[in-house]
Structure formats: structure tokens, C-alpha cells
Image: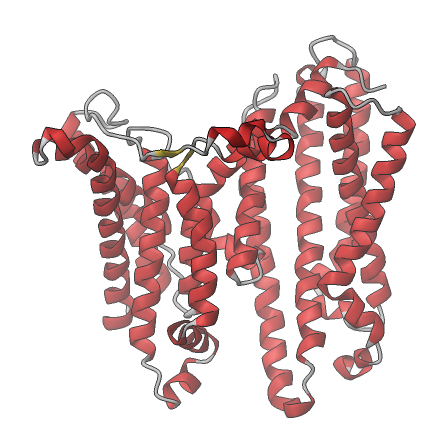
Length: 495
């Protein structure tokens, strides 16, 4: 049943250490600016200019790491040159953020328009200066001898330990920028929730007037937030040009700065969630690269990360409406306001939107199968064109059904807490069951392909069982358990 050569190769590739390592690699330039976007957004001044800031920092890092050979002694230059580029790139990121802060906070210019201006500046200025330095408008390759950031080598003995060897293959030889990115998640969490400045920052974003009334310097906090966002955007840009490459290319960020604007909303507005959301985008990016190796139009897999971005922005719009509703209720109900009840609704609404987002990805895959069935036939030609199209029809129908059952909670998230909470439970668990069952079945197929013999029936039964149990646990953990035990509050919320 599962003996198709291409299918087995794709599954083995997705569940391999090499794929997970590449996922971390492509997640890094999304995660770093996403943390910057999170900080500025929680302070109420979202940095729209992340894309331009990343480009400016990426270009600056390449130029200074290449030119610093003329300034530093040859005996110490090699280990220092990448860090010189990093330092200067981050400094330019700071300056770009400072420019945005000055225009918006000091001159009262529109934040969105100022951010768009920075993006245009970053894109055009890098090309203009690159042409002046190299005579090339496309890239600096061959004209500037730039350097890469160092790679982290793990102790070799870890490769001989059975379980740890798999993780050794994932994390070994990763760029130092990847390690910086994931350690930054812990740093930002500590900063936002364990320091007085972080508390002030969240207070300013929540209600600047109330924060000012207790002595918090709102403008100073917002300056700090924008500057920190510039630092993280600068680090993300450095990874693009010096993480695994050693040159700058025109508009090489390819919209990652815009994706980073949406990631915090998908992650629930906290650093840990933003980290997981960035991994999701990284997964889609890595999957699109792998799908791109098939004989299908390259534009189709390239759509995947940007479709996910659009859906994340829709999440933001819906969450903004819910936030406004919650603030009104909090003011009206006072001490009777149930934070846990509305927190459960907020988390479950994100879940419904995420499930619908995955269904849209399924539709893109189905369209790919319709438009280029030959790319899915496989090396052994085991699938006919008719079978590929029929599989595509099935995927499209299932995906549409999943969108339809989750749609009511996308249009009106408060339905989750009203008398239809059981409908939310059914839609969530059914959707999660389908997605997670596919995941577990593919995972078991990958294990089966590596020598652990399992019958096909056992693989399907185990995959379905694990998918159902995991789906139910996720719904309960995100707030379903609270709703089932406190469903009498629905009447209060409805009123």
C-alpha cells in the first residue's frame, strides 16, 4: 500500500533530521523580526518598516564585513570580520527604527505611512549604494568578499547516543544566528513578563492614558520598543546575507518583514506563541521548497507562506474585534468579569482560524494536483493522471468542508462561548483529528520505511487513534475544559 517510491522519499524527507534542520534555518529570518514586531506592537507602535530595516541591515553587514579587512590587522581579522558586519548591521537597524520613532513620536507623522516610506528607502537605497560600490544592481556576489557568521559545532560524542543522535543532526552545524534567534524567545519573554520595563511596555500598549496617569513615560517606552524592534529586524537581515550566504541580493528578504508583522497575532501576542507561529511559517516555507522540486508550477508552492500571512492578518482583525468587546465587558462588569472565560474564547478563536488556514493550504495543494498532475505521479509512475486528479478532488472537498465548519467561529468568535460551545468542540476536534491523523500516519510510514516493520492496518489505526486523542486534548487545553465546566457563563456573555 505504501510502497510508492516518490511518496516514501517525500515522507522520509519531511520526517528527517535534515528537513527539521532546514526548517530551523528558514525560520530564523522570520522569528527575529517577529520578536521585534511583537515588542513594538505590545507597546502600541507596530513597526511597519521591518522589511526595509532588514534589507538595510543585510546590505550593511555584507559591506562592512568585506571592507573591514582594510581596517583590521590580518592576524585577527578573520574571526572578527563577521561580527563587525553584525554590529554595523544592527546599528543600521537601530538607526532605521530611530528614524521611524522620530517621525511618528516626535513629528506626529502617520505610523503606517512612515513605515512604508522606510520599506521603500531600504529597498531603493540598498540598490543605489550597491551600484555605486560594485557597478551591479542585482547582487554583491563576486564584487565584495563578504564573510559568513560562524556555525556552532556540537560535541561529536552526541552523534553516538541513539536518541540524541537524531537531535544532533538537527542542531549541529547551525548558524550562530539560529541559536541567537531561539534564545531570543526566552530573552523577550523574560523582558516582557519579568522586568518592570516590560510590564510598563505592556501597560502602554494596553492603555497609554492609564499608564501615563500612574507616571509611566509613554513616549520613552515607545521609543525603546521601536529601537528593540530595529535590533531584532537587523539581526534577521544579517542572517539573510551572512547566515548561509556571503552576499547581498536585491530585495532578498522576499517579504519576510511583512510576514513578521503577522506572526505575533497568530502567536497570541506572546513570545512563546510567536516562536511557535514562526516555526509554522518556517515549516510552510520548507515544505514549499520541497514541493517545488516536483514538476508543478513553482508559483503554487511559493504562495503557501504568503497565504498563511494573509490568514494571520485576518486573525488579527478578528482578535482586535474581540479585544474591543472584552474591554467593554470588563468596564461594565467590573469584579464580575471572568478573565478565564474570555481567555478561553480568545485561544479557541485562534485555533479555528488556524485550522481554516491549514485547509486553504490543502486547496492550494489540490489546485497543484489539478494543474500539473504529472508532478505527482512519482518516479515509478505508480499513480495515473486520473488517480492524481481524484486525490486532488478529495483533498479539495475535505479542505472546503473544514473551512465551512470553522467559518461560523471566524465570523463571530463569541459564538464559541455561547450555547454553541459544543459545536466549537465538534468542529475543532474533527479538524484536528483529520490533520493530526495524517501527520501521525505519515510519521509511522516514515518509521516503517526505516526498518521498523508495521502492518498497514496498524499504521492507519494507530494514526487515527493518536490523532483523535491529541485533537481532543488540544481543544481541552486551549480552553475547552473551562467552557465545558462553566458553560452557564454563556448566558451571561450572550446578554
